[in-house]
Length: 575
Ligand code: PEP
Ligand code: MG
Image (cartoon, rainbow, N blue to C red; front, top):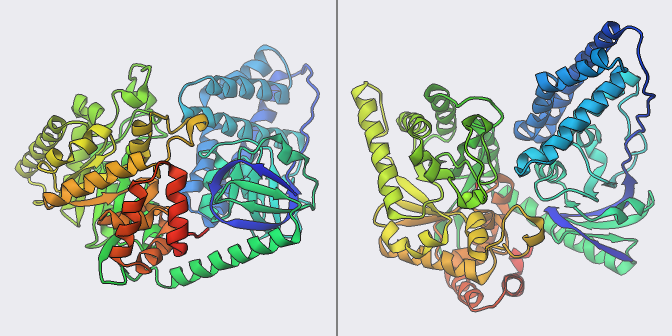
């Protein structure tokens, strides 16, 4: 048996034979053309076919994985209209007189390399999209059918160098048990799509993955990030048992997903969802969310070339608030900067964007950004239970300033005759160590806190959350982070404020007993994590959770904390 390690990208266990996904060879000869105009027309015709294919793939992906994931294909279709890319292809055909295949590959490769050279992780990842969409057009030009999956006939674990979004959609999901790739990181498409499909995945394992012959039996552990090649019988049956147990737990949890999360001794906590767009609201409700603990509003600002207006924002927020009726929806104001950039804002390049003019800092500096969003939120708050929170708060002054802008917008809207939320709770994200340490003062300024452990871990551990090389350091399970979380909750409760947590930690089964024990009031997570989270809470008493939490705070490492919970709360050891 060989054990290959990678990055855990999507939870769960898959056991089955290997299917090596190999892309078809798209070989062509580069040559000069007699009639460049006719060649350009041939290219345009291929472009149209590719767009039709993408529309079909989009529809299929939307059904399989939901609109959020499927949006990748809409973005790819837009790339086929990109004037720069098309101009470069045309230049190749009409200027240099080469065939469409060569002009396309040259232009796409140049474009992809340019993207890869950028600092922004998101844009770098788009290079794969450019290559993906170019190879689709190339297939059409060469008349090659879309079927690299012809050999996939029995349920298999799919191994590949990397999977592009189109690859993933082409696969017959009823025959895919899980994914394992040589390349890719936690934010790669393979990872995102696998999570959307609820399939286990391990990425970034290295090229040994490609040497495993088709048909070899493997165990893929998406929770631990491992691929076991040719395991012995004992190992297989141990993993089968783990898999069966977690499926049974999930099934039981799903049956009670819509019931509240109450501990055995009657302590109720709220379990709500993190969502990133209007479509996410439905998925959250279906998963049993009691509201939205984090509405990331960046979706309205990304993948476009100008700021969204107040009206557009109002309609989007209103749709979400209405979907949740009287359940709470916490809207987080724009958190741009760091790894999320808006090219059309033309902001100066920063040496350390995570320590720069990000989120609330940017919003306070740019009322043209901030005010339309606050106005839209206040108007949407008139139709439901909307709360607002500010991200990346470091100081009391920032909160006061932001609240003053909010009040000014409310007065303005009233004067203009709009219905507005008269009493809207206002909170902040606690995700900077300074805010955590000053929680007692900040609690005087707001109605609630939501702890953002994704950022709180990276700032506490001084480990960039987007850098795979220090990914292990930035663990929110580290007692340094947990101690801050505990202090924030204690300080807030002393002032009568409630506390939520909307970092990834809230949906981690092993973290739930600790957070419960530290007194967390609201757990906000990815919708698929909700049923299990509620089930873990129901299995505990508050005192049991408190004991685990206190013991965790005394340990000296993140792994020791996880081990402790595994031992003390077996029900939390799922996946
Ligand atoms: C966080 O930092 O924990 C958080 C929820 O915000 P984001 O991941 O959007 O930065
Ligand atoms: Mg954050």
